[in-house]
Length: 250
Image (spheres, rainbow, N blue to C red):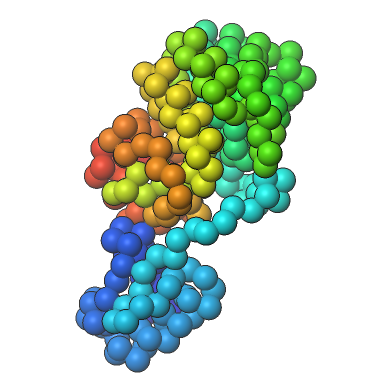
């Protein structure tokens, strides 16, 4: 087995279990402990694991990159997700969409639909849809400092005035056992409020966010209906989400 393949197997096990033991890895992959030690060193250097005594754990996300910088990351994966996700919407539906880099790209696909009403707290999404002549309602509230969106109690109270058919949310991390996470508390509050107003909840998350956690948990996996992700997502990780009862579109 090549080192690259071992690394992928190790990362898949970490995504499912949050930690791995070197002895277990050596036995499973049929290699020596020294080989596993080198593999974990390589993965630690690339920031994908944290080595601990006897094995490794998943590194926690400590910070979040600026919004505009995140907009340019993994554009192909986000565009792929957007094309899949828009197929979940039926004509005449009302859609709630929160602010995020993936949902901003998703808005470009929303702009191609007819007969759909969109409610959002994202300035970028509202601008994209208005420019395409679509029906869009921008929620009022206080302007966020990091993301071009509205947040706070006024935004939350406005969300509760609407009843939508489907909600789309773009968190920073999704774990098959631990749930859905945001880095920012206010963004998490907006997403939770939107999900409460729609019978169908859809998560948009590229492969880099799967098997991860962050600071604020918004939902358990059993509260989510559908996960739309990119084709680069590991197959065993996809299987873990499906075992958790979530529909996965890859």
